[in-house]
Amino acid sequence: MSFAETVLLGALAGFTIFLGLPIGRLQILGARGRVALAMFAVGVLSFIFVDVLSHGFEIVENAVTKYHDHQASFGHAAGLALLLGGGFALGSAGLATVERRMRPKAPPPKAPVAGGSAEAQTVAPEWVEGVAMDASAARAAALRTGMTIAAAIGLHNFAEGLAIGVSARAGEIGLATVLIVGFALHNATEGFGIVGPLGAVQPSWKWLGLAGLVGGGPTFVGSMVGYGVTSEPVELLFYAVAGGAILYVIGEVWQGMRRHGHRELGMWLLAAGFMVGVLTDLIVAYGGG
Picture 1 (cartoon, helix red, strand yellow):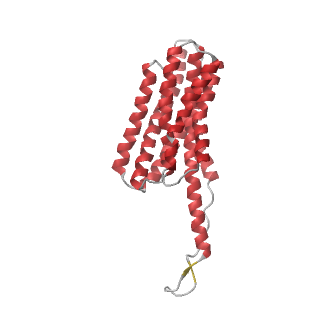
Picture 2 (tube, rainbow, N blue to C red; picture 1 turned 90 degrees about the vertical axis):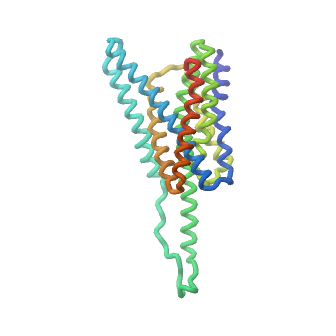
Picture 3 (cartoon, rainbow, N blue to C red; picture 1 turned 180 degrees about the vertical axis):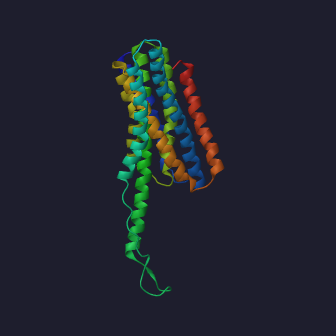
């Protein structure tokens, strides 16, 4: 498979993420529907979390096995283990720190009324302005969470692109083709993972386009990098950071959905989302990926 064909098919695998993004423009969902969509997204993200860390741990485990068989040094195995832990901390605690610093400070509380008796009280203009600021901040926070999810998924998809590029460069056409089909189906569900936690916030088409590029574009880039360069530490770092970031996002979405209730429905949809991730990944496994 040529470099141009690999890049083209890598783009196809990555940009199927756009198939699920337009649902974020729908405004017909009530609280029950928003919980269902968000928890389905959490299910998909939970599978991705398991998937990326299993791949990352596999790299470290292979290094330890090689050290045991005197095929690699202790420093190599220890370095990869530290890279896994450090990358995970960077994706979870690091992301939490960045998000806290980006969060705007809450405006000081203002009196809700101005003058007069209880019957003649009027709403203070400052209070109305404060409510508008709170709504704007809530919208910004929801969009920031969605873009964080897109970035975490993008890190995961970069590693998937590496797998496509490496197999294509090695001449394993059958494997590369199945990887592309499997990742395309898998990435199509990741669009729900990005827009599900937005709740009642309606993103613009520009925001959806950017989220698709952030989440799906790395598959395209990874296929180019994997075709020309193979770096185990880089692949491990992307897996580790993606795993930490996804865990952080799952916690944020879970906490945000608790106030809407419908816990049983949410858990069923979480399980459904996880199974969708499993089924799409089995296509890759069937091809030996």
